[in-house]
Length: 288
Image (cartoon, rainbow, N blue to C red):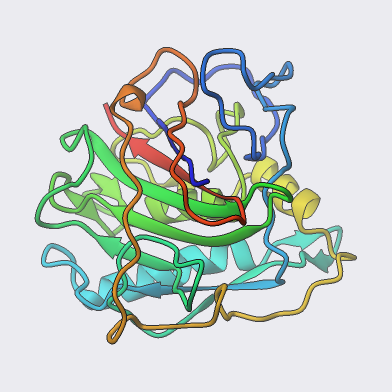
């Protein structure tokens, strides 16, 4: 069974500082299905995690017509590094992102073959609702019995938004978007801490999400502590492919009812896949 959930990141007024939350395997079918604690974190389900100490990401080779390839590469490396140099009481966290070669893969996970974790830019049409106010989506595929993440893909809505990469004239900052979405990819949900990179808000013209706040650092050290036994292997689930000689996996359907708040964080739509239960969690980053 494969489930898809859409969650929104919208511009909001900062509130009380609160701790990070982890995404879990609890997929709500209606309000109240997944109990929340006082911080708004789900208390049901298995928390998400990568079993490997290293996770590789690739850029789609078509890049973007609106952003130079050099700026995409520079920003991509900076965003990967933000989550890869976390120190936990003087020792490195047991997690790091790594760069893999460019691919032509689209969004999706193939449970029967090799895969790639890809970041791609949507210059010519946004395949989801809310094209005018959506900045990006992260889709995470995971094992429902354990919470182990099997793959992740990030889409940037570069056709409907003015995406910038410099420190001046900032509109919608690419590095901020990528750092936030890579946080979802490593298993984090939204934080109620208004200073966190993983907060559920984004202000046009800001770049502060580029730098992890103490709340984000605590999240990494909690999920991926230095003492965790994990081997560094960038190879995606099933092996690596650039998809040049491979049919793309089917895209999971979008759920229109999750396009805007208020209401439950998401709803689920089952789709028969394999006896092994997989779930795909799709999160959206929105602007007002």
